[in-house]
Image (cartoon, rainbow, N blue to C red; front, side, top):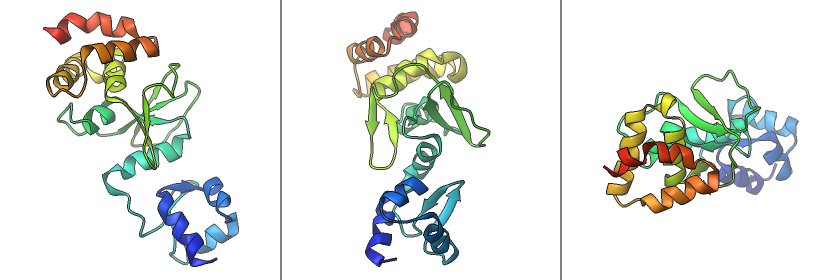
Length: 190
């Protein structure tokens, strides 16, 4: 394999075999590169160049690679990413389609029927919900996240001028989750 092809793998961050095939690699050549130490296997069917720059979002990259192109980081992970909660989540929270199942440890799947392309930011190597969607989903899943945590995150986002109540309301409307926000409206604006 040419070194420029391997360098292209480095830019991908965490990648799967289909992505490697898109760059001209086949399964045996990926296996040889892993055996030679030129690639690291980081999960079932997931690889990473040892010199790839992954930063603090490595867990997000890995989660989105594991759960497919529709997956997006959400829940407590997104609230922590936006500095709206102080406690570091013990698991990576991931929004996935309702039929997704997994026994992977370290992940909290939030199965949702809401559109997984609305209020989503596509970063280079992973997808994450917007601040507004993180708040709306937090309120929707308040029983899982905790009411005080969800309300506190909404108040903090507004106080830090990361968003407004109008933007949160628009996101809730776009997602069809206005009832979740309406339920906590008075607690947020108080």
